[in-house]
Length: 252
Image (cartoon, rainbow, N blue to C red):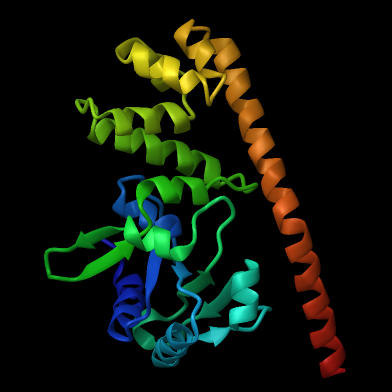
């Protein structure tokens, strides 16, 4: 169950008909990889009408912009995140981080088409990034994202362990961060493991049950993804710094 302040934010977004998907730590809670977070991270459809609905929701939540850039289609479509802090008594202190473009993740319409809808006992419903898309979104340079990424995949595996659905097995083989889990999968599904090997070379170590080599390759894979994320954000961070500098000049 999401904390009441978070539910206030999500309910307001829904009542204002903001087309969005929940991601980040709160989405991880719904998927069984528990993480405490007072942030609400959403990916948004970046269209003028939807942005107007978002502004209405922020007004209702008494949310204040807390950093550059300002809320605009231009900044969202470039890949920037826009940050608000709620002042409404029912959601006081909750931070809302808004994006419309995620590195390595499909456009919003594709994400919406395969979203996960969660219905709570009281009738509340929330729209989440699909697990597969959330996993991709968690592949960042931040240290905190990698343990969560591992827990997301492990939780999905444990929840569906008896499944022989080839799509699920291929997903686990493609995304697992755990040597033990990969070796178990290769032993249980040798044919699918050989297919996965074509896209993910480190599967060979799992087939051979070489845990040391597998752990080393998983770390190398993670380092490469972290570096890709750093390179992706470099020009965006430079632009943010330019916006901060311009803001300081305007105030002086």
